[in-house]
Length: 298
Image 1 (tube, rainbow, N blue to C red):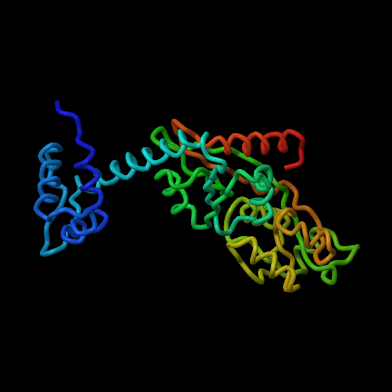
Image 2: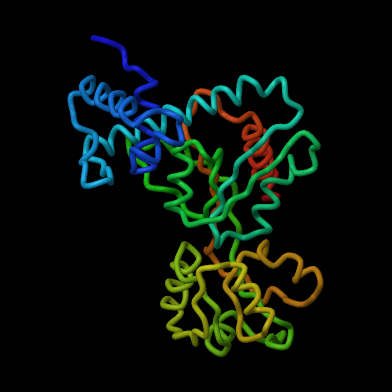
């Protein structure tokens, strides 16, 4: 069996992303006929048509979509290999971090702090939804993803999930809304609530109020911890949050922790992908997070 010709694969990848043979040929400074020969040779080698030709546009077949997934992974891995093996000759190292757009900024800062002040390190931080971030991790465009719920895992999953911390969850609000004599049940029954839209904190809160026979007054349901912090500062209600999210406001007296919610916690995770050449900065961060967890300071 003949080996796969990676020049053919590279040309196919370029055409697949452009969707137009003429435009790709111009960009690569090739004749259109020469590029067509490269694609046709790859199709013969693989035994499948990779494109449906509809007028001037090229559309991937099912085999073409599979081939493109592999091609993207192959060339991304090659780029990673070159960058990793050249790293020793560079004065700066780069860590590409994806973080859930709704994740606590204070938590992100705490995780990255061990490398933030190093003059030889550059951190590229990207915020997005979980699906987009995990796709970036799988495509090797991210080194680590920070989220507050673990991704689905099965035998074929390329992800490794590291539990970084578990933060207790409390009722948090401005001092004017709180009285010393209020019990937790009083607060839940009498104060308007700012709740997370989903997640372990929301599930635990709903179970707690059901157990106490309380129907809380919900003034806002939010999927962004930063927005929950702002709403609590506005004084519209008490927020169900881990104190780390509002640690600056708590330190400055703008907000106070009314009461902790028993048995309710928010977990934080770092998700990585199995790689032959993992970014060495990751080990520093994961070891530091593990040490904080053992010390009880996470």
